[in-house]
Image 1 (tube, rainbow, N blue to C red):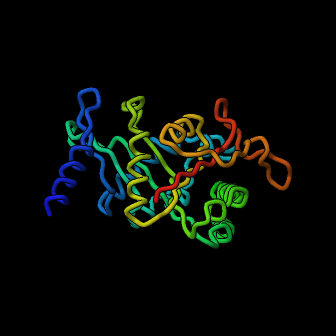
Image 2: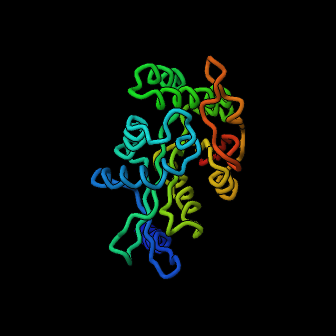
Image 3: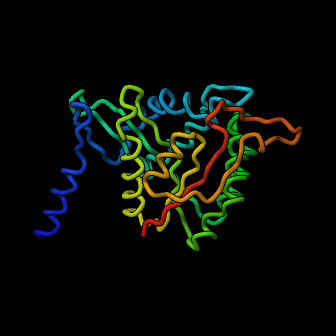
Length: 236
């Protein structure tokens, strides 16, 4: 029991970081955080995420995209960072989702049922990425912890919170029994973080190379966001 107590105290110290005078705490997001997380990712993720804000027909967040992504909070696959010194202000969020055999087919079926054209086209792109990389086959595993969203409040950026959110997600993935983590980074900056935390790039898709059946490039972000890079990391 003394070992478990010591480990808990160690984790407690690790969950508190000094950030330019602000005490930050990282934890698994809970059901009661759902509404605040939705508001946070709409404001601080989708508006900045290259794939979302460069969709040629609509740069606004697709509500069915947001609903799908945040739903995994209810499965314990989201972590949050709060500024304790500012009344537990939410300053960072990361959300993952499971990849499993049949996942690509489920994405394509979800695309056919999507309420918005933007989410339908996004799902088809995600399915294309999954097909081309095939993390499960590549890593010889039956499931993967896919880190989908990493968002940091603008006032707190440049302080390694994104790095810490990745690391907290690795720990959460291990706790949930996932052998491998992955991330499709559409942002040049999130890709650099993925490299920094030891993830390996196993696939690339240039936005200019992804077009619809009519030859239209659906996602047209500005440089340096020119491609989606898929990263993996062995967790166990």
